[in-house]
Amino acid sequence: MFPIDFCHIPVSIIKRSAGRSAVAAAAYRSGTKLTNEWDGLTHDYTRKGGIVHAEIMLPAHAPPEFADRSTLWNSVEQIEKARDSQLAREIEAALPRELSREQQLALVRAYVKDNFVDKGMCADFAIHDKGTGNPHVHIMLTIRPLKENGQWGAKCRKAYDLDENGQRIPDGKGGWKNHRVDTTDWNDKGNVEIWRAAWAACTNRALESAGRPERIDHRSYKRQGIDKIPSVHLGPAASQMEKRGIRTDKGEVNRQIAADNKLLKEIKARITRLYRWSKAETEKPQTQQSSLTALWEAQQQLNAPRTRTGKIPGFAGKRCTIQLFAGKRHPVYAAAS
Image 1 (cartoon, one colour):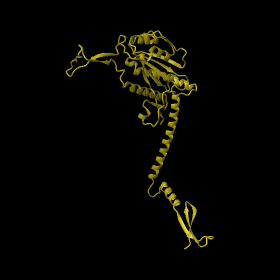
Image 2 (cartoon, rainbow, N blue to C red; image 1 turned 30 degrees about the horizontal axis):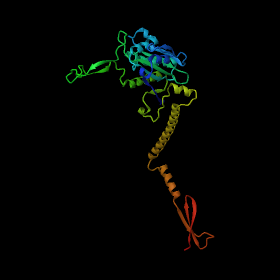
Image 3 (cartoon, rainbow, N blue to C red; image 1 turned 90 degrees about the vertical axis):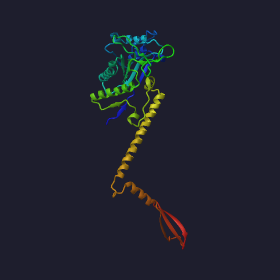
Image 4 (cartoon, helix red, strand yellow; image 1 turned 90 degrees about the horizontal axis):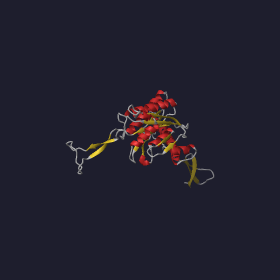
């Protein structure tokens, strides 16, 4: 069976409170020049290399002008008023090197459509490949839903707390106790697992269609029951430094992990061989002496002392006892009787 690789699929939120913006992230991912109308900053990444494809996919009820990257993400920036707003969600995934560029693009489009666009999200993805054996895709997704008329809707709504009779509960201040609920299920904690599993399934279908034996699994090695230590994600900064021959802390960790995994594999292989040999010895017929037993008995006989007593020329008047240990003679002298 061909080995199954663990795929690392980070899912993160682009937050204004962290000093980030959706416009800046989109410019960087797509290698374009965009101006954020919310703060007036221009982000120029037109000299960034390794961007082989960038594309926006929209749900049917999205305004056609959202197909323009600047229009889409500036609209997101403008609708989010708070300084701690969540602007976009981002998913990053490695692309199989075994697939052609066309096959990789078809894989991403199918995954984005089935899991996000058909659910009502606007998606902006970019495929990066600098020819270093690490092709991957960045997928940016809108968090706020769109109404059927193409206008931005609410992320959450007010819901009143009810008592056992289904009546609203006073808050003691002239109002009613309430809480907020999301208008979509996009923020459900279980979605991350669903999206990762869907990526693994889509990737494996693409590999199978291409006639490739390789497969991936979104689950950790521990969940797969594999005795292997996962490597740490380098990130863009450390990756660039490592490519230039500059050793980084994360790179050192991964090198140590690779060495540990190699040692672990060797130890496991030795244990397996020993187990199979021991099992084969145990299953031998009782009339056939086990080689392990024979070896032990031969060693015991070799180590057992053997004694011979008699006269030795040159030692008149004395008797000499010769004890043999492991094939060597050791004389022990005693008075003659």
